[in-house]
Image 1 (cartoon, one colour):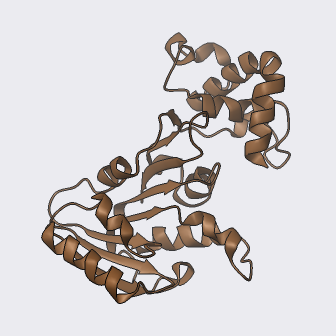
Image 2 (tube, one colour):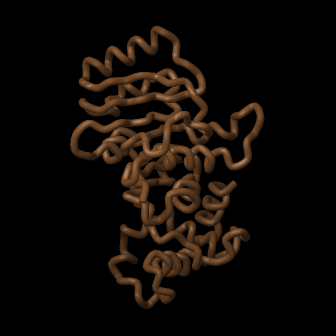
Image 3 (cartoon, rainbow, N blue to C red):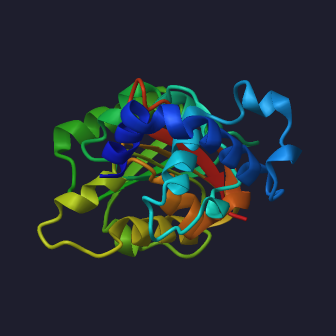
Length: 250
C-alpha cells in the first residue's frame, strides 16, 4: 500500500507537490526547521534522494495520518543507488581481525556461493528450517576452501538463543519479508526480529540488511536502532524494489 501511494504521488500529484516536498525533505534532514537553511547543493542531487523526497510528498499531503507532519521526517538520507547484496555485506563486515558473524534467515545456505563472507571470519547461519545434508556439506566445504568457518544453528529469529552481545556482525537477505507468510501471523514480527538482532550484537556491531520490503528502514532505524546508527541506506525504487543498508549498535 505504501509503495502504491508513492507511485500514485509520482504519476499524478508530482507536478503539484514535488517542489514543495523537496524543500520539506531537505529542511527535515537538516533539522533546522526552516527551508532557507538548506544549502543549494542539497537541492541539486544527492545526498537528498528521490526516495526521501517522495516520503516528503507523502507527509506533505497528509497521507500518513499516523505520522502527522513532515517535521517527523528521518534525519538520515536514503541514497539513490541500486543496492548490491555483496557490497552491503562487505561494508557490514569491515573491521580488523576475525569477526563473528550471524547470518539470519540463511535458508539452504546457497548465499555462500555468492562470495558474501571474507576469509578469517566465523559465520553462524540460523534458520527455522535445517538445510539438507547435501546443501550443508557443499556450503561448509566452500566456506573452508575460502578460508572461513561456517556452521548452522536451527532456531527462531524472534527468539535467538545467543547471549547479549555475542556477534560483531549480523546480516540478512530477503528475510524480513517472511513475516507476512507465517501460518499464524505475529504482530510486529519484523520489529521483534530486528530487536533480537540488535540484542545479540556487540556495542558498535553492525547489521547489514538486503530486503524488498518498502520502507523496512523505518522499522530497523526508526523503531529499533535509531537514526544515529545509520552508516548507509540505499534504494532506487525506479529500478528495483530492494532496499539495503548497514547500521551499527550505538
